[in-house]
Image (cartoon, rainbow, N blue to C red):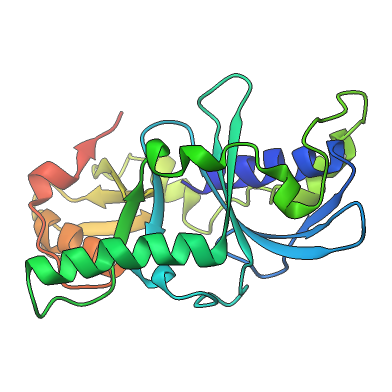
Length: 241
């Protein structure tokens, strides 16, 4: 979810500053890339992933170093579900090699598959990289006395009400609000009970209309996964409200 991603970036930037470094989100970086300046002036681009529970999400395309527009040199996986939160830092080369091994095994299991789609990153997979702040050229120990409240507006995007927000909240037209969580994304749709048609009003494919819940679920899952996926609408969506 976008909110979790933003909170993860915020936590990461605060941690860097409290360790004597400087950090700011890379402009236009939809995937949460952060530019970090170390204490001695070294510069890194860090791709931040965050979660509150379960596993982190990445892409099979991350098997290639520099595949993304931000061209990260490191990855940071922030676990917001612990108190205090935990951060795991791994070089882009090591992470790409790890993803590549998984993709190779996945391809070998069924030749002809596409090297695309989402993957899950379990905590035990990167546990050896916990708190490796030294890789970024900042102190391992944070200074809790450093005030970072002024960084909030710089690291977390303000939530903007979408043009169709009123339609999501207002169900007076008789449509049922449906919600789905898939590969870290939340998708909201309104279903017309008399016809079964769905309109997606938030998340992936917003504004699109589909004749059935299954058609909508399959389209969204295919877009997020990067390959054709068939989903049962009854399993994909849940009623909210």
